[in-house]
Length: 229
Ligand SMILES: [Zn+2]
Image (cartoon, rainbow, N blue to C red; front, top):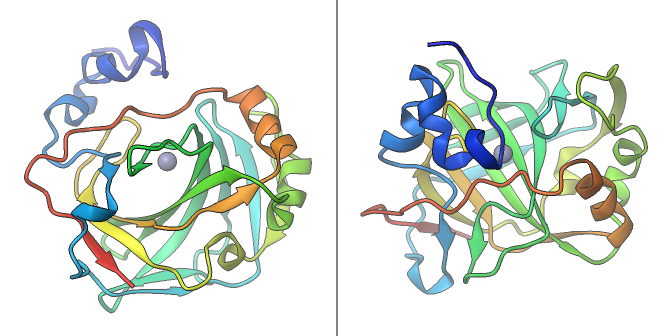
């Protein structure tokens, strides 16, 4: 089967992703798909895993990959998420508009995904919901160089990803998947239960390029959601 491009609407939109290529079969057949609806009342007090962050000031190259705006780490060694004692190194972070996860049935304006990989290529993603409010100063430099069209030349910026994560991080934790094709299962998801903010102008800058790049909510099935404080 020819590999076809996927999108967020029409005949290449989320409900058809699995039909576009054999490798996308998990998008319809996967057993633990993301995103999911998060509810404070459903969360158990028992976390699925311990979570520690070790983030530092880092250079990122900024790209428009045709699906989102993504910041790629050049040097993978300097930032990590430590999940149950295993290091997952930060590879990239990117954004969705509107949010992919909902919290108590509310969508947020946007959502940040920090994507990490361990030595065996297992994935752990930290999600942070974003609402309209104060200007996000940490993202100001990146927002100045966002490429408006796909494949435009990369610019490099420097920021400390710890400033993109709420202080006193507490997360919903569940077993999920990539939210874009190939929708692979076995992704350890941690989603912050508090949001960060962007100004209306910052939201608009992104949403003029990607007004809608979110996958709809997937069935939770019999999965349980833990909460880690
Ligand atoms: Zn994402």
